[in-house]
Image (cartoon, rainbow, N blue to C red):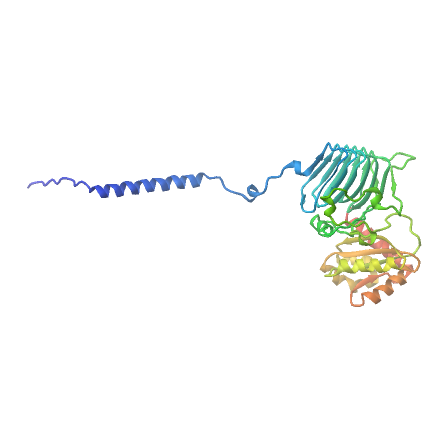
Length: 366
């Protein structure tokens, strides 16, 4: 037997080039794959615009008029500090605002989703809308306020409060963006954390106080673009008497139930009743359960409880001689196709008001 040995054939030169190219391509693919594997993952928060704190701060200013136009703050936090003799306007909604060591300033703050905290400020005049309001170590602040919860002052003296009164076209939407109801305003229900025996650290501004006398409209050309009105009839927040002494021993409760026109209907009734000389004492927007309805509406509960499932109710307290009859006739004339709870008589109205607002205060932790 014999063995046959054959010599290995050399590949053609073109074939060698093809193999080399294929190997190079494979290597490049592996490198690219490795590069892809090493690339860090991208998250949505990585792609957000970077926030520059300087855009949300006014610090160390003197004798200046400054502000932010609607859309420029857009729910961010804001800081105001060490300003003197300044006019400051935040025409937008924000998350939270702190105001530290400001002297003799006029300040407007649009709706604040959380808290506003004044510290070490004196001789300032302000218009503020917020969820929580607090001051510490302040002196002589005069504030037109809308606050959803009980305002708190601490180690502060000479504080004066009035009801928020302001309008510009973007303000209503800013209240919604901040999660604030225009009907929840406890501006006069102040809690003094550090009371002094025999002294009163706070009081109320005069009923006839003119907002522009305290916080003038902005003078800079840029801020003049905001179409502002301080007319009480145009105010986004209904003007209430709060804890001022009532002019009559007769009040009336009116309650609107959730629907497409609840806010518009409530505002219409306010216009009608105040136009007839009755006073709006307080307003509230709050959710109710069936058991709450039984307690508040009592013998009328069966009629109104099914409506509570649709959403929050809006309640209004009016005061003045003949308030019950005036409110009932207005509701019958203007809202004939709408379900509205109205106190039935002067005798029952006082209890209606107490039942509802005692419930609402407990519901909102007041």
